[in-house]
Length: 366
Ligand code: NAD
Ligand code: DAU
Image (cartoon, rainbow, N blue to C red):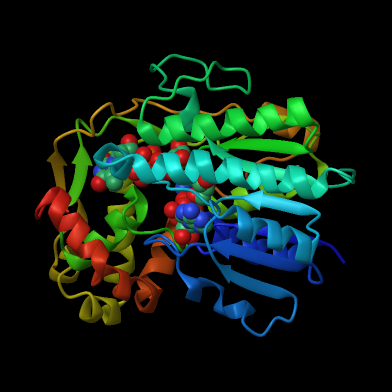
């Protein structure tokens, strides 16, 4: 039996990853450390509440004393580090929490691992989760990002993630800490906080609210279903080489406006096919003989908005044999279905502090 620390395990990708890891490793001791910020949700992990080998710790990755105690108590073989402030728009409004958690928090975690593993680093793994945003922005004809693309972060969020990546690399190089890093493209799927484009569009469409499209809607993202991301992470954690970086992506690029259109059409089809949904979501245009696309609303652009991201994931395929399996159309349809059926999850979020934040930032456009 092995022991794994998963930070940020109550957030979007962290939750999916904890559930994935439990399926892969039924006997591992899983310890989740999460500060339960606005983006964390303890109840995401309710399925593990009676699991004797699961422990949830409500705490902050910046707390060195807490980390020391956890490393001593559980003697982790694996650390998978998701905890972060993750939303670009919030980093533009205020970046302090991003520097604190993403840079200082990652440093505290690296220090705790270095200290605890100094005598026996063999067979251990510190996996740091990063993003394609550290590479900057691509033009329409540029080749996708590879692992050797020069870092060029453009938002405070991306800069803070770049800082954390450099710290992780430096700990591998200087101290021989068994670090791997993965840089992934845009994820979507269950449990994603509704401030991000995909769930925001789905929920707003269901409620008949405007679908805000930044700028001209032609910014391109490379979409990956979160299940594919979790499978790739597990592979890198188990089989990746110490000190290496692996890009993870779906090779499924799409301009935002097309993606929003795809989501709208999927919702329309679901509602037309099921009269019970039309009764449930009575403000959705599709419930009233109209189309969700009618809700698309162009709004002022995000400052410094990166134009295009695209990932070259050849290294992951060539070394570890991984390729994303879930197509964009299938993954988005599954995600629409999850949110349609997941009101118990998203309703409390929609009516809490998040609603006030959205109103304060964007007035009624969101
Ligand atoms: P999220 O915002 O949904 O979740 C972040 C989690 O971290 C939350 O549960 C939150 O409570 C926790 N957290 C925040 N600050 C903390 C602190 N100081 N101590 C302990 N816990 C803390 O984020 P996500 O979208 O799941 O992203 C997870 C990781 O993946 C991040 O590192 C992000 O940079 C990276 N990433 C995300 C995407 C994406 O598309 N969402 C893509 C590539 C990489
Ligand atoms: O690329 C990986 C990154 O993907 C992760 O590192 C980040 O944590 C994650 O939040 C995500 O960043 P983005 O900024 O790409 O995701 P977001 O969902 O915020 O926006 C996706 C695109 O949609 C982007 O071009 C901005 C646009 N957008 C977003 C929102 C919230 C809109 O047009 N309207 C919106 O309301």
